[in-house]
Image (tube, rainbow, N blue to C red; front, side, top):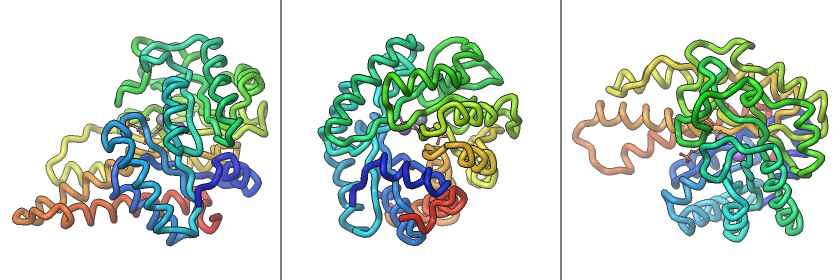
Length: 328
Ligand code: G3H
Ligand code: 13P
Ligand code: NA
Ligand code: ZN
């Protein structure tokens, strides 16, 4: 059944686990997430970006998630709008049946310029007022994703601020977070701790100066009842990079967010962990391998099967690692 995101987050907090939130764009990704969740009896958060809606078209995207609901009637599912850049985008998602939305007011509607604190409070509060009236959960964001190594906003897949950033922008302030949650009444708060979207997050295995898990602890100590969300939290497994390279792909040296750091976050209030890139890497590695090993094959089902199996493996691992297995 569809369930409320707030309910899932509350349950995760009461039972000290984290929920991976996987991005979906197509049937193979929906299949992978649902197969993994039903094998492990884990609750599901599927999230769709504006880009996903553009790729699949709103009806196809919605019906893929509805198909999951029909095919797996015993698994609780949340259908979440990822990175809504305006109240209008959030309202369109709610109208289309999403049970949870993210109002990302950390940036202006163009998705490029950093917003003022007042703008973020006002737009987030506006969405909360409408969403809560009809039982829809709201995730808001305070602080900007981006790299503490380069002091650049997150630009990888077009989601971040342009130009040079300050440490104040790239790290969510605990005191401001407390004020923000009080004023907006958001259900979950996405925070900035040095992660960014995409494959290129860190130039080395991250240490505390570039991945500020300590900041999560400070925020959680200040607002212990707020559910925290980690974006840009793919782990970018080295073996997936190696597979892509081995079969002709061009991946530069890069590092993601280590699973053990996410687990540390889960001990300190992180309840939703956003993952898109790891599934992209897994599917790409499997497809590249298949094409090289089977040059005469041309039925898409032949190469999408190993791709969705590879995606499922990522989902199984994260459900287990975040303590989500058996919680459905
Ligand atoms: O927020 C970033 C997610 O990875 C979605 O990316 O906008 O390319 O679908 P996308
Ligand atoms: P990754 O690019 O690290 O998978 O992050 C996804 C995300 O934060 C979607 O909102
Ligand atoms: Na989100
Ligand atoms: Zn994100």
